[in-house]
Image (cartoon, rainbow, N blue to C red; front, side, top):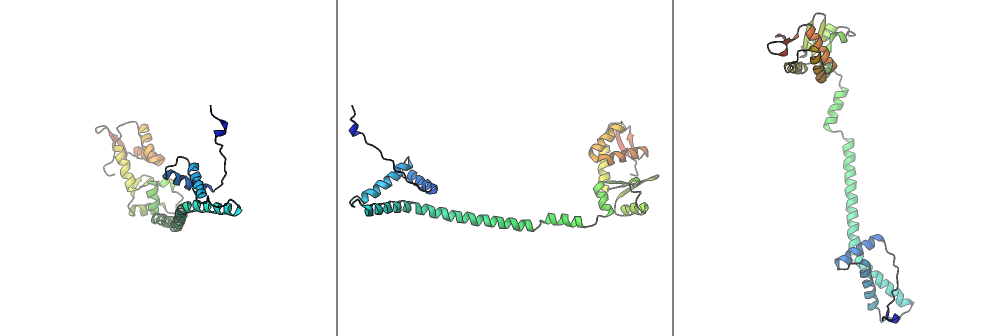
Length: 234
């Protein structure tokens, strides 16, 4: 049977230190083989107390012991806090450098942005507009003062211009080649179905172009080839 007088009583001593200091002490404790940080702190306190055990217990000796304990803990923390301060300083310098580079990049437009800006400020020519649209119908530019000169200018700039009775159609050469290549791949005979296929790739203007060319006989279905084709002179 255990005698109550043999039971050791524990006394709780509350010590408040900054959280960052505690984290550092925890790392030191683990490196020294301590499972609990509190055990390591207790060892520090006991060691400091034993070194001053011959001192008479009075206010002066207690203050001296407190300073000794504080110095012991501080000596342990100093190398780590110094490294943290150095790391924080490096991070601050790095962030400042990144922000500076970012500001410089934002202020200075890229070569692509400069080129796009030049294109925007440059007035578009008739051939530029044709390249964007692919096709221009004379029926849609009746507002021009001199439509004949407009289509002549497009033709002299490299555009394909079809003269179909009272309709003139200007075509970007690349657009026209893609249009004819697409027709070569279509074996469906029904013009309505073909129109839908053309519109899916060339939009409404492509469908309109196909209808006009079929009506004028420029585009037709070749029974022998089983495909749509254009007149030889096209």
